[in-house]
Image 1 (cartoon, rainbow, N blue to C red):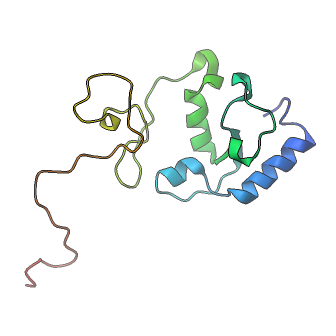
Image 2: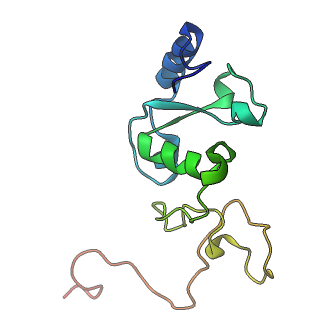
Image 3: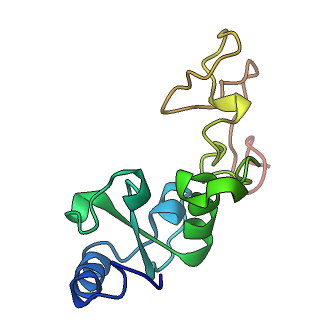
Length: 138
């Protein structure tokens, strides 16, 4: 964050306004956690043709860990781009990495088309969640 446009007064005002509108980390929120964001990221990188000063719909708030993970896998990483999958899962058990095999549509052959709302397939067993004691009241 040392060069243009990040060292301008205009960016500093835009960053502060965006953090006021979206104070929580977008990556953590998608994983079911609530973390305060301190980094504002361009959704479309400037190096990829995105505007230097987009509207708030062109920006995203992240915590340092989520921003680093996103940047390391994006086009802005250049030659050092990571090909490792993102580790972990969200609160519902879905993998954080959209290229994880569980994100594929069941029965689909190998390919890159992934469904947006990847869900863990339901189990064939008939299980029941019980809280405290046995389900028979003993």
